[in-house]
Length: 456
Image 1 (cartoon, one colour):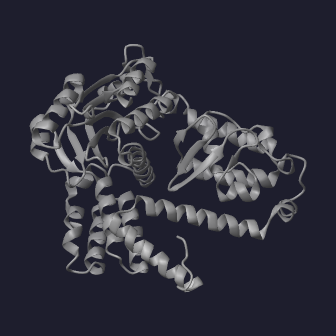
Image 2 (cartoon, helix red, strand yellow):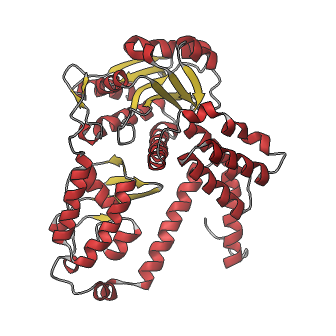
Protein backbone atom coordinates (compact mmCIF):
# COMPACT_ATOMS: atom_id res chain seq x y z
CA UNK A 1 0.00 0.00 0.00
CA UNK A 2 2.84 2.39 0.87
CA UNK A 3 4.57 1.68 -2.46
CA UNK A 4 1.31 2.45 -4.23
CA UNK A 5 1.18 5.77 -2.39
CA UNK A 6 4.74 6.50 -3.51
CA UNK A 7 3.72 6.01 -7.12
CA UNK A 8 0.65 8.19 -6.60
CA UNK A 9 2.97 11.04 -5.63
CA UNK A 10 4.30 11.00 -9.19
CA UNK A 11 0.80 11.38 -10.59
CA UNK A 12 -0.14 14.19 -8.19
CA UNK A 13 3.00 16.24 -8.88
CA UNK A 14 2.46 18.72 -11.78
CA UNK A 15 6.17 18.37 -12.64
CA UNK A 16 6.83 14.66 -12.07
CA UNK A 17 10.04 14.06 -10.09
CA UNK A 18 12.63 11.36 -10.57
CA UNK A 19 11.72 8.41 -8.33
CA UNK A 20 13.67 5.14 -8.54
CA UNK A 21 13.26 2.34 -6.04
CA UNK A 22 13.83 -1.38 -5.70
CA UNK A 23 11.74 -3.81 -3.67
CA UNK A 24 13.09 -6.87 -1.87
CA UNK A 25 11.58 -10.35 -2.09
CA UNK A 26 9.50 -9.59 0.99
CA UNK A 27 7.95 -6.53 -0.72
CA UNK A 28 9.97 -4.16 1.47
CA UNK A 29 11.62 -1.03 0.10
CA UNK A 30 15.27 -1.89 -0.57
CA UNK A 31 16.62 1.23 -2.29
CA UNK A 32 15.18 4.63 -3.17
CA UNK A 33 16.36 7.71 -5.08
CA UNK A 34 14.17 10.82 -5.25
CA UNK A 35 14.66 14.27 -6.78
CA UNK A 36 11.99 16.72 -7.85
CA UNK A 37 12.40 18.96 -10.87
CA UNK A 38 12.85 21.98 -8.64
CA UNK A 39 15.46 20.21 -6.48
CA UNK A 40 17.42 19.30 -9.59
CA UNK A 41 17.37 22.95 -10.71
CA UNK A 42 18.57 24.18 -7.31
CA UNK A 43 21.54 21.79 -7.35
CA UNK A 44 22.43 22.81 -10.91
CA UNK A 45 22.53 26.42 -9.69
CA UNK A 46 24.54 25.78 -6.47
CA UNK A 47 26.65 22.63 -6.95
CA UNK A 48 29.89 23.86 -5.34
CA UNK A 49 29.28 22.74 -1.73
CA UNK A 50 27.24 19.65 -0.88
CA UNK A 51 26.01 18.93 2.66
CA UNK A 52 25.08 15.30 3.43
CA UNK A 53 22.96 14.34 6.44
CA UNK A 54 22.04 10.80 7.51
CA UNK A 55 18.78 9.87 9.26
CA UNK A 56 18.42 6.36 10.67
CA UNK A 57 15.17 4.42 10.72
CA UNK A 58 14.18 1.95 13.50
CA UNK A 59 14.28 -0.81 10.87
CA UNK A 60 17.97 -0.15 10.24
CA UNK A 61 17.64 1.71 6.93
CA UNK A 62 19.31 5.08 6.51
CA UNK A 63 18.09 8.11 4.57
CA UNK A 64 20.76 10.23 2.89
CA UNK A 65 19.67 13.86 2.41
CA UNK A 66 21.78 16.00 0.08
CA UNK A 67 21.59 19.77 0.65
CA UNK A 68 23.33 22.67 -1.08
CA UNK A 69 25.50 24.95 1.04
CA UNK A 70 27.84 27.88 0.71
CA UNK A 71 27.91 31.69 0.46
CA UNK A 72 25.80 31.88 -2.69
CA UNK A 73 22.92 29.88 -1.22
CA UNK A 74 20.35 32.21 0.34
CA UNK A 75 17.29 29.96 0.23
CA UNK A 76 14.97 30.47 3.18
CA UNK A 77 12.82 27.79 4.76
CA UNK A 78 13.75 24.36 6.01
CA UNK A 79 14.24 21.72 3.30
CA UNK A 80 14.51 24.51 0.72
CA UNK A 81 18.16 23.52 0.30
CA UNK A 82 17.45 19.78 0.01
CA UNK A 83 18.27 18.58 -3.50
CA UNK A 84 18.24 14.78 -3.27
CA UNK A 85 16.96 11.91 -1.09
CA UNK A 86 18.39 8.40 -1.24
CA UNK A 87 18.16 5.13 0.69
CA UNK A 88 21.00 2.73 -0.18
CA UNK A 89 20.50 -1.03 -0.01
CA UNK A 90 23.33 -1.21 2.52
CA UNK A 91 25.75 1.29 4.00
CA UNK A 92 28.74 -0.50 2.49
CA UNK A 93 31.06 0.50 -0.33
CA UNK A 94 28.94 -1.17 -3.01
CA UNK A 95 25.61 0.21 -1.82
CA UNK A 96 26.90 3.77 -1.43
CA UNK A 97 28.76 3.68 -4.74
CA UNK A 98 25.52 2.72 -6.47
CA UNK A 99 23.66 5.53 -4.69
CA UNK A 100 26.24 8.18 -5.66
CA UNK A 101 26.35 6.92 -9.25
CA UNK A 102 22.58 7.30 -9.63
CA UNK A 103 22.85 10.81 -8.21
CA UNK A 104 25.57 11.70 -10.72
CA UNK A 105 23.64 10.20 -13.63
CA UNK A 106 20.71 12.58 -13.07
CA UNK A 107 22.84 15.58 -12.05
CA UNK A 108 25.58 16.46 -14.56
CA UNK A 109 26.57 19.40 -12.35
CA UNK A 110 28.17 16.93 -9.90
CA UNK A 111 31.51 17.57 -11.60
CA UNK A 112 31.44 21.11 -10.16
CA UNK A 113 31.23 19.92 -6.54
CA UNK A 114 34.28 21.31 -4.71
CA UNK A 115 33.48 20.54 -1.06
CA UNK A 116 31.36 17.88 0.65
CA UNK A 117 30.34 18.41 4.29
CA UNK A 118 29.53 15.26 6.30
CA UNK A 119 29.12 14.20 9.92
CA UNK A 120 32.36 13.29 11.75
CA UNK A 121 31.41 9.59 11.89
CA UNK A 122 30.93 9.25 8.14
CA UNK A 123 33.08 6.13 7.63
CA UNK A 124 32.78 5.41 3.87
CA UNK A 125 35.11 8.30 3.00
CA UNK A 126 37.05 6.23 0.41
CA UNK A 127 33.84 5.61 -1.54
CA UNK A 128 32.98 9.30 -1.42
CA UNK A 129 36.49 10.26 -2.55
CA UNK A 130 36.31 7.76 -5.40
CA UNK A 131 32.96 9.02 -6.69
CA UNK A 132 33.84 12.71 -6.23
CA UNK A 133 37.60 12.78 -6.89
CA UNK A 134 37.84 16.56 -7.25
CA UNK A 135 35.92 17.35 -4.03
CA UNK A 136 37.35 17.94 -0.56
CA UNK A 137 35.48 16.07 2.20
CA UNK A 138 35.22 17.86 5.56
CA UNK A 139 33.30 17.41 8.83
CA UNK A 140 30.49 19.97 8.95
CA UNK A 141 30.34 22.64 11.66
CA UNK A 142 26.70 21.74 12.33
CA UNK A 143 27.41 18.07 12.98
CA UNK A 144 30.39 18.89 15.21
CA UNK A 145 28.19 21.27 17.20
CA UNK A 146 25.47 18.61 17.62
CA UNK A 147 28.09 16.03 18.58
CA UNK A 148 29.54 18.25 21.32
CA UNK A 149 26.07 19.17 22.60
CA UNK A 150 25.22 15.51 22.96
CA UNK A 151 28.48 14.79 24.78
CA UNK A 152 27.88 17.64 27.24
CA UNK A 153 24.50 16.14 28.17
CA UNK A 154 25.86 12.60 28.42
CA UNK A 155 28.65 13.58 30.81
CA UNK A 156 26.12 14.63 33.52
CA UNK A 157 28.19 17.68 34.41
CA UNK A 158 27.27 20.13 37.15
CA UNK A 159 24.45 22.38 35.86
CA UNK A 160 26.52 25.61 36.01
CA UNK A 161 29.39 23.97 34.10
CA UNK A 162 27.00 22.51 31.53
CA UNK A 163 25.37 25.91 30.98
CA UNK A 164 28.75 27.61 30.51
CA UNK A 165 29.85 24.99 27.98
CA UNK A 166 26.60 25.14 26.01
CA UNK A 167 26.62 28.94 25.96
CA UNK A 168 30.27 29.05 24.89
CA UNK A 169 29.62 26.46 22.19
CA UNK A 170 26.69 28.43 20.82
CA UNK A 171 28.58 31.73 20.75
CA UNK A 172 31.65 30.11 19.18
CA UNK A 173 29.60 28.46 16.44
CA UNK A 174 28.11 31.86 15.58
CA UNK A 175 31.57 33.47 15.46
CA UNK A 176 34.03 30.70 14.59
CA UNK A 177 37.21 32.75 14.61
CA UNK A 178 40.51 31.04 15.40
CA UNK A 179 40.66 32.88 18.73
CA UNK A 180 37.15 31.85 19.79
CA UNK A 181 37.78 28.25 18.80
CA UNK A 182 41.01 28.21 20.81
CA UNK A 183 39.15 29.63 23.84
CA UNK A 184 36.51 26.91 23.57
CA UNK A 185 39.24 24.27 23.26
CA UNK A 186 40.88 25.59 26.44
CA UNK A 187 37.53 25.70 28.24
CA UNK A 188 36.88 22.04 27.38
CA UNK A 189 40.34 21.10 28.61
CA UNK A 190 39.65 22.80 31.95
CA UNK A 191 36.04 21.67 32.50
CA UNK A 192 35.91 18.12 31.14
CA UNK A 193 37.35 15.26 33.25
CA UNK A 194 40.68 14.16 31.71
CA UNK A 195 39.49 10.59 31.17
CA UNK A 196 36.45 11.87 29.21
CA UNK A 197 38.17 14.58 27.19
CA UNK A 198 39.42 12.30 24.35
CA UNK A 199 35.81 11.28 23.62
CA UNK A 200 34.99 14.87 22.66
CA UNK A 201 37.58 14.99 19.82
CA UNK A 202 38.26 18.61 20.77
CA UNK A 203 41.11 18.72 18.23
CA UNK A 204 38.40 19.35 15.62
CA UNK A 205 38.20 22.89 17.01
CA UNK A 206 41.81 23.51 16.01
CA UNK A 207 41.46 22.24 12.45
CA UNK A 208 41.19 25.57 10.65
CA UNK A 209 40.22 23.95 7.34
CA UNK A 210 36.92 22.78 8.86
CA UNK A 211 35.97 26.28 9.98
CA UNK A 212 37.03 28.09 6.83
CA UNK A 213 34.02 26.47 5.17
CA UNK A 214 31.79 28.12 7.78
CA UNK A 215 33.60 31.29 8.89
CA UNK A 216 32.36 33.49 6.04
CA UNK A 217 28.95 33.77 7.73
CA UNK A 218 28.14 36.70 10.00
CA UNK A 219 26.94 36.04 13.55
CA UNK A 220 23.30 36.51 12.53
CA UNK A 221 23.73 34.34 9.44
CA UNK A 222 25.41 31.61 11.50
CA UNK A 223 22.58 31.61 14.03
CA UNK A 224 19.98 31.36 11.27
CA UNK A 225 22.02 28.66 9.52
CA UNK A 226 22.21 26.43 12.61
CA UNK A 227 18.54 26.96 13.46
CA UNK A 228 17.52 26.12 9.90
CA UNK A 229 19.52 22.89 9.88
CA UNK A 230 18.20 22.00 13.34
CA UNK A 231 14.62 22.23 12.08
CA UNK A 232 15.49 20.39 8.85
CA UNK A 233 17.03 17.46 10.70
CA UNK A 234 14.10 17.32 13.13
CA UNK A 235 11.61 17.21 10.27
CA UNK A 236 13.58 14.34 8.71
CA UNK A 237 13.64 12.50 12.04
CA UNK A 238 9.94 13.15 12.59
CA UNK A 239 8.90 11.54 9.32
CA UNK A 240 11.63 8.95 8.69
CA UNK A 241 13.51 8.41 11.93
CA UNK A 242 10.54 7.50 14.13
CA UNK A 243 8.39 5.44 11.73
CA UNK A 244 9.14 1.69 11.65
CA UNK A 245 7.80 1.44 8.10
CA UNK A 246 10.39 2.87 5.69
CA UNK A 247 7.79 3.06 2.93
CA UNK A 248 5.29 4.95 5.06
CA UNK A 249 7.98 7.29 6.40
CA UNK A 250 9.20 8.21 2.93
CA UNK A 251 5.67 8.62 1.61
CA UNK A 252 4.82 11.01 4.46
CA UNK A 253 8.06 12.95 4.00
CA UNK A 254 7.68 13.34 0.23
CA UNK A 255 4.03 14.30 0.54
CA UNK A 256 5.02 16.89 3.14
CA UNK A 257 7.64 18.29 0.78
CA UNK A 258 5.12 18.52 -2.06
CA UNK A 259 2.62 20.33 0.16
CA UNK A 260 5.19 22.81 1.47
CA UNK A 261 7.35 23.47 -1.59
CA UNK A 262 4.81 25.19 -3.82
CA UNK A 263 5.53 28.66 -2.46
CA UNK A 264 8.69 29.45 -4.40
CA UNK A 265 8.28 33.15 -3.52
CA UNK A 266 9.59 32.43 -0.02
CA UNK A 267 13.11 32.05 -1.43
CA UNK A 268 14.87 35.30 -0.65
CA UNK A 269 17.24 34.84 -3.57
CA UNK A 270 14.38 35.60 -5.93
CA UNK A 271 14.67 32.40 -7.97
CA UNK A 272 11.81 31.27 -10.17
CA UNK A 273 11.22 27.87 -11.70
CA UNK A 274 10.58 27.82 -15.43
CA UNK A 275 8.84 25.09 -17.37
CA UNK A 276 12.18 23.57 -18.43
CA UNK A 277 13.22 23.21 -14.79
CA UNK A 278 15.94 25.86 -15.13
CA UNK A 279 16.45 28.63 -12.57
CA UNK A 280 16.54 32.25 -13.67
CA UNK A 281 17.71 35.29 -11.72
CA UNK A 282 15.43 38.10 -10.67
CA UNK A 283 16.75 41.63 -10.32
CA UNK A 284 18.64 41.94 -7.04
CA UNK A 285 16.92 45.28 -6.49
CA UNK A 286 13.54 43.53 -6.13
CA UNK A 287 12.21 43.82 -2.54
CA UNK A 288 12.01 40.60 -0.57
CA UNK A 289 8.56 39.14 -0.35
CA UNK A 290 9.03 38.43 3.36
CA UNK A 291 9.76 42.08 4.14
CA UNK A 292 6.65 43.21 2.29
CA UNK A 293 4.51 40.62 4.09
CA UNK A 294 5.90 41.61 7.50
CA UNK A 295 5.30 45.30 6.75
CA UNK A 296 1.69 44.53 5.83
CA UNK A 297 1.26 42.53 9.05
CA UNK A 298 2.65 45.45 11.09
CA UNK A 299 0.24 47.83 9.36
CA UNK A 300 -2.73 45.53 10.01
CA UNK A 301 -1.76 45.23 13.69
CA UNK A 302 -1.56 49.01 14.10
CA UNK A 303 -4.84 49.51 12.25
CA UNK A 304 -7.01 46.80 13.82
CA UNK A 305 -5.66 46.50 17.37
CA UNK A 306 -5.61 48.86 20.32
CA UNK A 307 -2.27 50.48 21.10
CA UNK A 308 -1.37 48.05 23.93
CA UNK A 309 -2.43 45.03 21.87
CA UNK A 310 -0.38 46.17 18.87
CA UNK A 311 2.63 46.70 21.14
CA UNK A 312 2.38 43.18 22.56
CA UNK A 313 1.91 41.57 19.13
CA UNK A 314 4.72 43.56 17.52
CA UNK A 315 7.01 42.13 20.20
CA UNK A 316 5.93 38.65 19.12
CA UNK A 317 6.45 39.56 15.46
CA UNK A 318 10.00 40.69 16.24
CA UNK A 319 10.74 37.14 17.39
CA UNK A 320 9.13 35.74 14.23
CA UNK A 321 11.32 37.96 12.05
CA UNK A 322 14.45 36.52 13.66
CA UNK A 323 13.45 32.86 13.56
CA UNK A 324 10.32 31.31 12.10
CA UNK A 325 9.72 27.84 10.72
CA UNK A 326 6.49 26.41 9.35
CA UNK A 327 6.94 22.73 10.13
CA UNK A 328 3.70 21.21 8.92
CA UNK A 329 0.11 21.80 7.99
CA UNK A 330 -3.12 19.87 7.91
CA UNK A 331 -6.68 20.56 6.92
CA UNK A 332 -7.61 22.23 10.22
CA UNK A 333 -4.43 22.91 12.21
CA UNK A 334 -0.92 24.16 11.49
CA UNK A 335 2.16 23.11 13.50
CA UNK A 336 4.63 25.96 14.02
CA UNK A 337 8.15 25.61 15.44
CA UNK A 338 10.10 28.67 16.51
CA UNK A 339 13.56 27.68 17.75
CA UNK A 340 12.52 24.77 20.01
CA UNK A 341 8.92 25.51 21.01
CA UNK A 342 6.25 23.67 19.01
CA UNK A 343 2.60 24.69 19.29
CA UNK A 344 -0.67 24.01 17.48
CA UNK A 345 -2.46 26.83 15.68
CA UNK A 346 -6.17 26.84 14.88
CA UNK A 347 -6.27 29.26 11.92
CA UNK A 348 -10.06 29.60 11.68
CA UNK A 349 -11.26 32.92 13.23
CA UNK A 350 -10.79 33.71 15.97
CA UNK A 351 -7.32 32.22 15.54
CA UNK A 352 -6.05 30.37 18.62
CA UNK A 353 -2.79 28.74 19.66
CA UNK A 354 -1.75 26.40 22.45
CA UNK A 355 1.08 28.72 23.57
CA UNK A 356 1.11 30.65 26.83
CA UNK A 357 0.89 34.11 25.22
CA UNK A 358 -2.26 33.36 23.22
CA UNK A 359 -3.98 31.48 26.02
CA UNK A 360 -3.32 34.27 28.53
CA UNK A 361 -3.90 37.38 26.39
CA UNK A 362 -6.09 35.98 23.57
CA UNK A 363 -3.94 37.92 21.11
CA UNK A 364 -2.21 36.77 17.90
CA UNK A 365 1.03 35.20 19.14
CA UNK A 366 4.29 34.64 17.27
CA UNK A 367 3.01 31.28 16.00
CA UNK A 368 -0.18 32.77 14.52
CA UNK A 369 1.86 35.62 13.04
CA UNK A 370 4.32 33.09 11.62
CA UNK A 371 1.43 31.28 9.94
CA UNK A 372 0.16 34.58 8.46
CA UNK A 373 3.65 35.45 7.23
CA UNK A 374 4.18 32.01 5.67
CA UNK A 375 0.83 32.24 3.86
CA UNK A 376 1.37 35.91 2.87
CA UNK A 377 -1.73 36.97 4.81
CA UNK A 378 -2.46 39.81 7.22
CA UNK A 379 -4.41 40.10 10.44
CA UNK A 380 -8.20 40.33 10.04
CA UNK A 381 -10.61 41.96 12.54
CA UNK A 382 -12.46 38.67 13.18
CA UNK A 383 -9.22 37.13 14.43
CA UNK A 384 -9.33 39.35 17.54
CA UNK A 385 -11.68 39.21 20.56
CA UNK A 386 -13.77 42.41 20.96
CA UNK A 387 -11.85 43.78 23.97
CA UNK A 388 -8.66 44.09 21.89
CA UNK A 389 -10.27 45.79 18.88
CA UNK A 390 -9.18 49.35 18.18
CA UNK A 391 -11.30 51.90 20.06
CA UNK A 392 -12.79 49.39 22.50
CA UNK A 393 -10.20 49.27 25.28
CA UNK A 394 -8.86 52.18 27.31
CA UNK A 395 -5.73 50.64 28.78
CA UNK A 396 -3.72 47.45 29.04
CA UNK A 397 -4.26 47.27 32.79
CA UNK A 398 -8.03 47.35 32.37
CA UNK A 399 -8.00 44.41 29.98
CA UNK A 400 -5.62 42.33 32.06
CA UNK A 401 -7.59 42.94 35.25
CA UNK A 402 -10.69 41.55 33.62
CA UNK A 403 -9.03 38.60 31.89
CA UNK A 404 -6.13 37.55 34.10
CA UNK A 405 -6.53 34.44 36.19
CA UNK A 406 -3.89 33.20 38.61
CA UNK A 407 -5.29 29.67 38.26
CA UNK A 408 -5.01 29.86 34.47
CA UNK A 409 -1.50 31.23 34.86
CA UNK A 410 -0.43 28.22 36.92
CA UNK A 411 -2.30 25.75 34.71
CA UNK A 412 -0.65 27.04 31.53
CA UNK A 413 2.80 27.09 33.11
CA UNK A 414 2.45 23.47 34.26
CA UNK A 415 0.94 22.36 30.94
CA UNK A 416 3.79 23.90 28.91
CA UNK A 417 6.43 22.43 31.20
CA UNK A 418 4.80 19.00 31.04
CA UNK A 419 4.67 19.08 27.25
CA UNK A 420 8.30 20.17 27.01
CA UNK A 421 9.47 17.44 29.39
CA UNK A 422 7.44 14.87 27.47
CA UNK A 423 9.05 15.90 24.18
CA UNK A 424 12.54 15.66 25.69
CA UNK A 425 11.88 12.19 27.08
CA UNK A 426 10.50 10.90 23.78
CA UNK A 427 13.50 11.93 21.72
CA UNK A 428 16.44 11.10 24.00
CA UNK A 429 18.46 7.89 24.12
CA UNK A 430 17.48 4.98 26.35
CA UNK A 431 20.35 5.71 28.73
CA UNK A 432 19.42 9.39 28.93
CA UNK A 433 15.74 8.46 29.36
CA UNK A 434 16.47 6.24 32.35
CA UNK A 435 18.59 8.96 33.97
CA UNK A 436 15.96 11.65 33.49
CA UNK A 437 13.11 9.36 34.51
CA UNK A 438 14.98 8.49 37.70
CA UNK A 439 15.35 12.19 38.47
CA UNK A 440 11.61 12.74 37.97
CA UNK A 441 10.86 9.71 40.12
CA UNK A 442 12.93 11.08 42.99
CA UNK A 443 11.35 14.51 42.67
CA UNK A 444 7.81 13.12 42.67
CA UNK A 445 8.54 10.95 45.69
CA UNK A 446 10.03 13.88 47.60
CA UNK A 447 6.90 15.96 46.99
CA UNK A 448 4.20 13.38 47.57
CA UNK A 449 6.04 10.56 49.30
CA UNK A 450 7.07 7.08 48.18
CA UNK A 451 4.09 5.62 50.01
CA UNK A 452 1.89 6.81 47.15
CA UNK A 453 2.87 5.67 43.66
CA UNK A 454 2.90 8.75 41.46
CA UNK A 455 2.04 8.23 37.80
CA UNK A 456 4.70 9.81 35.58
